[in-house]
Length: 362
Image (cartoon, rainbow, N blue to C red; front, side, top):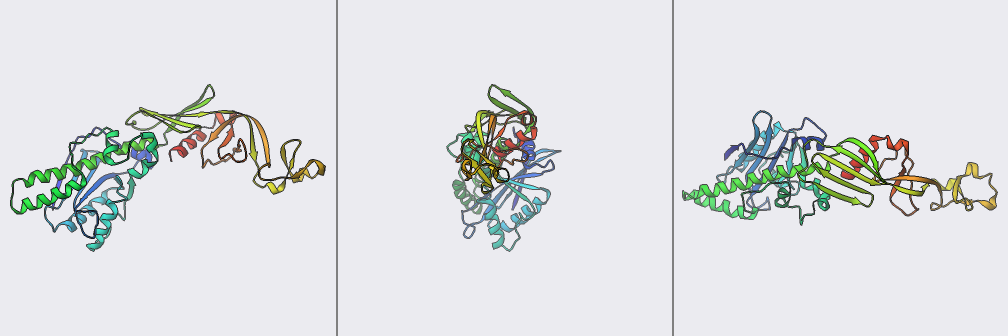
């Protein structure tokens, strides 16, 4: 086994974004990626693990565990497992789908415990997947996303190419061919740049950060709320989530735009069996009061007509909104969109805007 340590130069530092996203200022994150001789851990082996982290004293650090023979896989896994003890979160790109289960299965085959038992896991691919309409890319492969985040790699190999290069390396080493070092460097570069690309891609988590609310104001018929995040977005973008909500990202600023709706809206009572419907007034009334209305002017309420009407300005809220002290309104019975009354109370409720942003970026 060979252990290679480096101090790569990076133009990105996503620590603040990661801490904000994970809601923990004490996170110690380790980025990692593996290289294997095949996709199945039953008939292949792991020959390279790469890791990158940010050290408060020495800056960016990288470490690679490389199997320069066919016998050191177990040694690599033991060394990497011990190294993980100093970190709280393992960051990877689609590692939940391949890297982590592969390592765990190889550990099982070798009689080792999983190295991931005492560390949290953050899969950037899974976290940004719902933002694919924002990014507008053909796919969310690491090569695509890291370019989006500003990383241009020197390595041109694919993971499949690496399998053949590793085989060539081992053959050249056996015959003491001078070309073995070139093959080794290609493998190390590919793995290192996978880890660096993962680090750059972590910046895209900024688009899912809640941000800190700075101001709320009304421009025309649109409510605009501005939030700031630690760090900055890799690029400016606008995300039209629905006709009711759009998010604009630029620098370290998020702007949430919510158009207000004016008109007569309906609040539906859930316990409609306890209400009468008054056709002439087009409204529902509780039976405790409606019992005094003549029978000719009342009828048992149905779910579809058990409502009270309210005229005014209304603010749409996203699915999952916790009503708390707010009454929810709809335009009609079948509508899934919910609204709250936009009044003096709503204007002053800053936590309300924070909750809406959290729901939209969850």
